[in-house]
Length: 488
Ligand code: DUC
Ligand code: ZN
Ligand code: ZN
Image (cartoon, protein in one colour):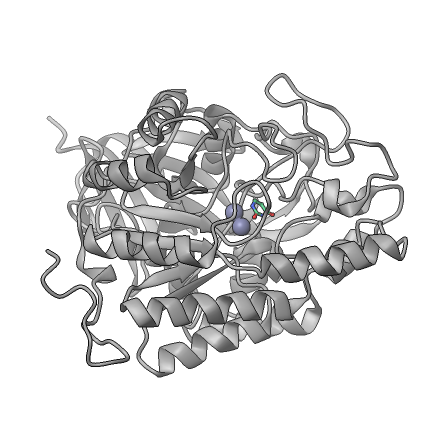
């Protein structure tokens, strides 16, 4: 009897630390051997000339979540979102379970578990808190203990921002319960003030979104998060860093020894504020927050990724249809037609499927990073930071057989018609990329092959996350006082 369910044969196995010519043996959904000349498996996959890499871990994607601007549900479901992720070489997603207004937090979370049962790949949640009320503060410890080991905070948006006193309260609770925090860091009142001035001046088009929230707005909030994190000795991660000045704050803090982490997203490495100035209302397709910046910021972000100041590239998938509302979402990018003022344009872009091909093309094909850096930024680092490693994020005996087989020479023109999300556009229409994931396996099962989704709804499993060392506080406070002494 064959020792392996599947053998992926003859590929270049690439992890964050090594590249080796080897076969990968899979049994029961788990990698059981990485070696040359493995015996035949019941299924054989020929990977000669291809890279065999850990499937992507996308630690920032909004699926079946209400828009912070319109309050309406965004357009992908857990099935369509995870199906498109799989076709783009991603095998785990960390989505969100938002606190719903008027709901108990436990009920909001149960609702998201129910929705996510349709997922085609494995998933877990950041718990979004908008209002740290008594119910939330009482319920969070048990939700964390159940494996929801990260809390997400928005510092802006009228609908769900948390003010600094709430951030401090939640940081303290997270620290005491061995949880992590991820933050959308922009200065709410600065954006509000600037937006009012822009609208009063008649500057309402999509492109003025970028003027309403220049880099200084992000830099200030990033600095504030770092300062609060330093006071509490609480490691946390800044989401979607877009510009040199915000990344500099993170770099400076890391040089002081502060345990602060940063991600950027594929759109901030590929798009600029000029994209929001496209004609015929098309600029709205590119509106996301923070705004895309300048070519100089793109190069600066690459520098910070190469040196490890920023540790991962996520999608921040948050899709709204452009022209045609769908079965799952009545929201549109231009709800009031072509003249819709920028503050009413739902923020966010579709990107689960294109995240890795864009990162591969711009990074590896473009000569900015090597294959192991690509694996680190797209899979290993998020798996480590969010407590999923080494089950996810590597190819090694004992790891889940979550694998993407990449053809580094495959040339693809990105077309909306070929993608698997439930959205009516891609911001990358017509982009030519070299390098594409040709086969994706989730726990040993082929879920995407040759450009087709071949997985099934409900294959995905919830990834409960136990306490892990990577996010442990340092035990260093900026005064002799330890505010947590005697609390455990
Ligand atoms: N900005 C957010 O804050 N959330 C979702 C998408 C976006 O662009
Ligand atoms: Zn955000
Ligand atoms: Zn987001």
